[in-house]
Image (tube, rainbow, N blue to C red; front, side, top):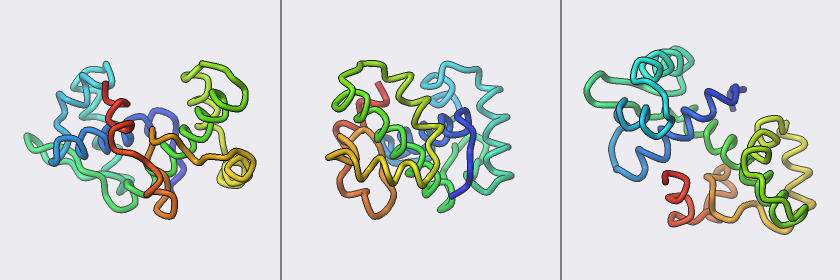
Length: 146
């Protein structure tokens, strides 16, 4: 998996979610709206993602994740979900934003240890790594788009 910043993780996550929901590449306008940024910002980030081989972008058609981008976004979203579930179920805290920030900071080793300590890898709000992927639920994942 590629190491990514929180910002890159947000874009990868949204490309993945929009593409999956629409069944086609994610369009620049859709991403801009979902991320609450300008279309120019999206286009700039898509160029960055393409240069890092995380996504492909074709003007007027949209963006699609590469295999490396797909693997990376699953890890990012899984770590967010681990942290969100830990906050909600184990700490009884309802602070999704802080949980996501914690998820961004988790190393692979710490995420694995946290997974061992909690009774759930996710509540379906993410795309787990390939070996955990079947535990995620499409209907809950769709909630992330709203």
